[in-house]
Length: 457
Figure 1 (cartoon, rainbow, N blue to C red):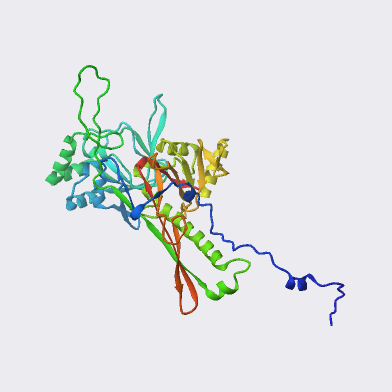
Figure 2 (figure 1 turned 45 degrees about the vertical axis):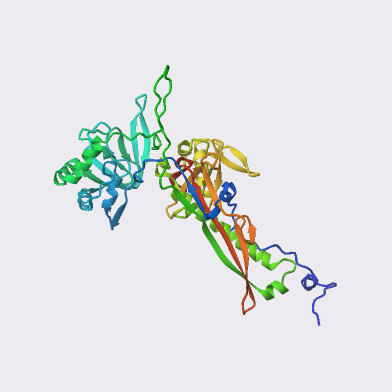
C-alpha cells in the first residue's frame, strides 16, 4: 500500500500518459559555413573548368626548400634553381656542389644579417624564421619595406653583379636559421664549371622580356602621337597550358533499417532526419576541402607574391591594411578563424580603435575598411597558435574567386548534391548514396591574398 500522503496523481506517474515535446536531432559540428554562402557558384559542365589567361613569364615559385637532420639544415640542391640567375640550370652535380658550399648560421631576434650600403658579398637563404627589410624613408627616417620568412632569400644579385651593394638592412624579427653562400666560394665554383659560368653570363646579357608589371606578355601600343605615325602591330598571347580544375567529390552511404523507417517515423521522419544531419556533415567537409585541399584549396592556391607576413605576430590594423592593398581591386570579403578575429580585436582595443560592423547576409559582421571579416573555423590554427587570414575578390565578372559545382544531377536533393536510392539488402537495411561535387578556382593571382604567420594566442 502507498505510504505517502498524496492527495492526487504524481507528476512522475502522469508523464506516462503525456506527450513529450521533442526537438529535431541537434549537431555541434554545424557551423555558419560563410564560405559556401559567399562563393559565386559556376557550373562546371563536363566536370572540369579551364582558366584561360594571358601568357605570363613565371619560371618558378620563388621559394627554396630545405631538409634538416636534427639541428643541421641543408638546402635541396635542385631548389637553388629558384634563384633568378639559376633558372633553367640543369647540371645536378654542380648544383649539389653549390649546396655543399652554404654555411648554416643562427641569429637571435633583433640581430642584423646585412646592413644597407655595405658590399653584397653573400646570398642568404632563410631556412626558418622571419626578417624585416629596413630602408630609409623619404624624410630620412627608417622604414619597413617588407617581411621575409621561411624559404625566401636575399642577396641574389651577388651572383651576377660583383659590385652589388645592399640597398636595405636585413634584421631578424624572430630567431632565424639561415644558409649563406659567400662571393669567394661562388666565384671559385664558376672557375670550375664552364656550364655554370656560361649560364650566369647568358643571364647577365639577356635583355628584359617585354612584359608588364604582372609578368604578362606585353601588348604593344602607341599613345600621344601626332601625324601619320607608324603604329605597332601586336597580338594577345595566351598560356599554352592553362590550368583545369576538375570537380572533387565527397560521398557517403547512408543506411537506415527498414524497421526504423516503418515503425518510428512519428512525429519525425527518421530517414529525413538522418539525411539532414548527413548532408550537414557533408557540407562541412566540402567547406574544409575548399580551404585546405592541397590541389584546389584556397590556402594552397594563393600566389606566393600575394602571401604576406604579419609585422610582429598578432594581426594588427597595419597588417590588414597591407593585406587589403594586395587585393586592392575591389576586395569583397575576408575570412579568418574566430580566434584570429578575436586577436585582431585585441590589437584594435590596445590602440583605441573600434572596427566598424556591416550588414552581411542579414546579420552584423565585423569589418575593416568596409570589407567584412567572416569567421571560418576551417582555417587551421597550429599547435603554436599560428593561423592565416584570407582576403578575396569574388566572381567571374571581376576575375575573382569562384566556386565550381555541377547541378542537374540524377536524384538531385539540393543544388549540386544528389541522394540516390541504392536498394534494400538481405538484412532489410535501406541504403542511400549521398554525393556532392565541388571545387574552387582563382581566376587571376591578385584575386586572393593571405596574411600568414598570424599569432592568435
